[in-house]
Length: 512
Image 1 (cartoon, rainbow, N blue to C red):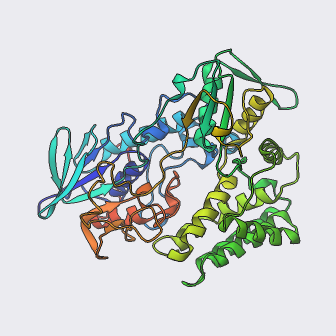
Image 2 (tube, rainbow, N blue to C red; image 1 turned 90 degrees about the horizontal axis):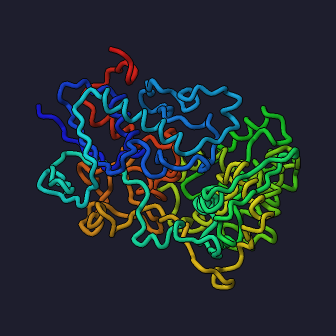
Image 3 (cartoon, helix red, strand yellow; image 1 turned 180 degrees about the horizontal axis):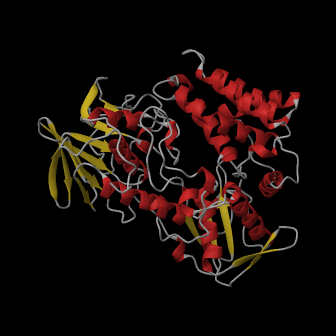
């Protein structure tokens, strides 16, 4: 029997995770599979988001103890990676790992080390082509992939293309002079990284005083002023931690478990009302306040309808979230909303993926998610402290409600990343939808896939030999922009269907 020719398009964290699943399912090296991987970025397994050459002040927004690319979903064989978790790979003390937010470059090196191990240990032939796929076409029973070196045919293709590339990236930070006023479009995590690049990245430094506050010492090479703008006028807040809750740990754990069961048990016609009620109830448990449930319900309803107003004082809001993280202030409603969303997120992903979200609720859900996620997945505490120090130094203006047009700026930089989903003009995705090989559900951005990651075509039938994962499927699958591999079992099932043998292998990279 001839081998199944498999192409993985993209070898960032998602593509590497797909390869790990193929190995874990026990392909025996008997010629059952032949895998070709296309990835132009030199940092295999990491990709641009976790590139090794990033400066060390660009941090993850979750602690080192949470970084683990091992498969822990339960739907397939567990990972046997010799690296273990990031904390194990780094040899970190567990208590330190719980509170240390590592540089993205460090995590990228961990991801690449895992990828190198996968490449050398796979029990089937692998070819890694450092090229971008420019075009995909169906040719008879095969898929033809065109790259700069030519055209290759495959039986199976997995699209793991990650973040879309902007057609026009606009002016970069390197063009900003030390006397200029720079406007930044957006105030998400990318904007915060950009702000730090224009200050700390230009030789400035942060010094800590005896009260744990930071002071910024300029280098003289910073812009005269940095003015981010936000359409909502609401900032991202410090990522909340459960150990700040006034409730005892055991009741919180049980409340989260009960909330997860309620969300998973919502009927097909429940809409997102049941989701909001569950979040509001958990907020009351977290804060130990009866009124918190009512206030949370009102906030969530306003978020779904786009009725939340601009933050009166973004600087005070960021500072308040930082003081909560330090244990200097009682947790408040934004803290509880963010923590409730994050703790219930696995249940939300499971219940509302794969068409579990009604088309009529999708717009409201996206509004809700965008609002709660700025509370749930915000910057690490140290970055919030740096922003406040830059405000005190007069370099950063956080009057977020103003548009860049209302103030004088010399240069504007766009920090808003391309949204997830299908970008039809981008290679290699161009033409797949018009040819009927993929489809996008009403109100969604990403393509529809089965529970085995198979693409669904225009007529509603499965497209033979074509699969997709990650940001390309966002809204049909929820929560793709994360290193957490336990949320999405689709690629594990895809790998299981391709592997001819399912006998367990020795730990990847272990001596034979």
